[in-house]
Structures are given as C-alpha cells and as structure tokens.
Image (cartoon, rainbow, N blue to C red; front, side, top):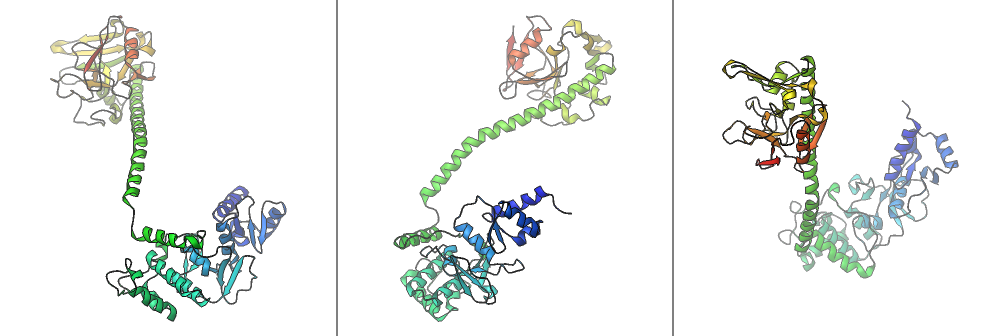
Length: 481
C-alpha cells in the first residue's frame, strides 16, 4: 500500500536527520519518492541537489560529520551499495590518531569505480579484501587499523610516525603485535622494536614475548573511537599521554569521587520526588477503592428503601458492611475493600476485620436506627433518606484499630469507625499531610484534614460531640470539643 505524503516526508526527514541532512535518490525511491517527485521538490527549493544522485535538506550545518556522510553516500554503486572505504589519514582520525591533516577525506574505491571524485576527496583505487574493512556503528566502512598503517607506510609515512601509530593502536586494543609481525616487512620490524624496547613497558602482557593467545585485537563493535578534529603537531605528545592514561590507568580517585558526588546529589534530588509520586499513587488507589465501596453502598440503600445496614449480629452471622454488600452481590470484588497505604494493604480472607471503616453507630439519632433482639442480637442502619446534608456526612473512611486488647484490629485497618469514646477503631489520618480519605453520602471523595473532619461531624450532630482520630503512629488525638 502506498504511503501517505505526510508519512513519506516524516520517514525521509528521519533518514536525513541521521545523515546530516543528506539522502540519495535510491533512499528516496525506497521511501516512495519517484524521480518526478524528486525533481519537483528540488525545483521548489525544498531539497538541494548536491551531486549526482545525492540531495540535501536545507538548514543543516556543514561540519566534518556532514562531509563524511556525503562521501559515504557518494561512494555507493548504482545499486545503492556502499563500496567506498575511508582509509589513510581519514581512517587514522577515526581511530583517534589526531596528528594528521583533516582538510582532505581519503576514500578507497574498487578499481572499476568510475565516478569523478568531488572537491576535497582524495581517491585511491584498489580492490580491498573483506578482512581489511570494518563497518562502524555510524554505517561508515573503514579500513582496519592494520591495513591503515600498511597504506600509510606504502605512501611514504616516516618510520617514527608508523611506530607511534602502532604503539597507540596496541594501547587502544585495535591491533596486536601478532598481527603486526604478520604484516609488511617494515611493520614486522616495528613490531620487533616495540616488543624489545622500553616503550613497550606497561602494555605488553606478561613478558616481552607477545603471543596471539595473549593479546587479541578488539572486535570492531567494541571500538569506542570517533572521528575527531586533529590536534596540532605541538600537542601530539600531550594527546599521546592522554591516550595512554585513559586506556591503561582507568579512573583516578578524584574522578571517582566527583562521579560519586554527582550521583549522590542527583539521588538526593530525585528520591523525594519519587517518594511523593509513590505516595500520590497509593492515595489515588485508596480513593478509587473507597469510591467503589461507596457506590456499592448507594446501590444497596436504593434497593432497600433508603436503609444502609452498617452492622448486624444474630448469633451466627456477623454482618460487617463489606460482608453484607458482598453476600448480596453489590461488592463482588473484596480487593477494593482495603486501603493500599496501610497494613494489610491487600484483601486477606483470613483477616476478616481488616478493611475500610464504616461509621457503624456514630450518627445523629434522627438518621440512625438500631434494632435490638434477644441474646444481644442487633441490627444497625443508616437512614439515608432522612439525611439533610449528605455532602457533610461521611460514611466510609480510612480507619485503624486503637485498642491493644483487640488483637484482630490493633494497629491494622478496621471495619468500623467510632468518633470517640470506647470504640475499638478511629479515623486514621495516615496520608501525606495528616489527611484521611473519606466517602461522603452524596458520592464525593475528600482528602480531609482534621479541621474538615470536625466540621463534617458537627454539621449533623451537636457542636460538643466528641471527635477523636488516630495519628500516623496510631496515637488517639482528641479534636473536639
């Protein structure tokens, strides 16, 4: 199926971004731009024709990376396959040997390659063996380090330069004495000098004889070198010292301390943010669970003519609020009956007293009904239809057991809430900011502080009503009167 114009443009733009704005007509055709499209966009000024079969988006910087990308595209054959290989001084720059000139780009192409080189490109024609070429992570084809210094020796590079390059190559792990001893006669002689001279100290493994099994050249994908601009000849010795230290000495103590300090500072900045995000996520989950419990209670009271059973006991059946709603299929999933921010955090069928709390008996007498039967049987109801200010009457909320003689609920979530007095549970202000999540009878959720808790109680009951809560440490705190 043909791509939409916007999709084609996005794909071509992404490709060009990776290639310093360049792309070839082969690449454009593969994305979906035919030759007439290419001609049109070029005439409109959207693309710039750079060379035969090569185009570029305007606005990209002209730098060394862009030059290399252009040469990489230029060095493709008619099928769009890269046949050009960066070599000689350009390859040395790739390997981090920085005492070479950067103005000219050196490219080796097959003997049958017929294109005329663009300005600034020095072309070498020879058929390279596959073992003499590696492909970098950027997609560039580069001669191996051994082949590079062989080419430089063939072009007349001085013996001391060749020796220094071989020295650094061994330091970097991109060539070995074994490979040099199996190279050209001149490089074999240099390998022998490095093996026996004092210059070899510190990088020859074990002893002065280096065997293939002891010193292997690193694989191309292990190289951590990039194209760099050259140092001046005066700074060559300093750059060599830098290479030696970074390749063999590792990090200094000061560098490690700096890194550790930076990590510590970042951790100190991020940990409070992560803690706040975690607490917020738990609070939102708590409110979501509480909302589902309140919705189930509303459905129950609608079906039972405005009566919401808060607790009951008939000798064999203890009607805790969640059990009543669950047994009657108003709350089929009891996993929502607990707050994830306090023990036990998840529903546990063996801990049947641990859930959100409901105000069982702490209501004004005008909206509360208790039916007593024989043998301490009782049924407790909230008369929903008689509540005048449902937005101020909370029914469910965060709770915790506060009596140490009640092991099943002490310091755990508890199914009931007593506003004060001798009850075993209280509202629990356990969330960040000393707040408790409450579900009000009109259906809304509040993250209520102690002042809001008191105001909601006295709005429906006497102003002298005893109001107590449990703080984060489960200590009972009197709020009113």
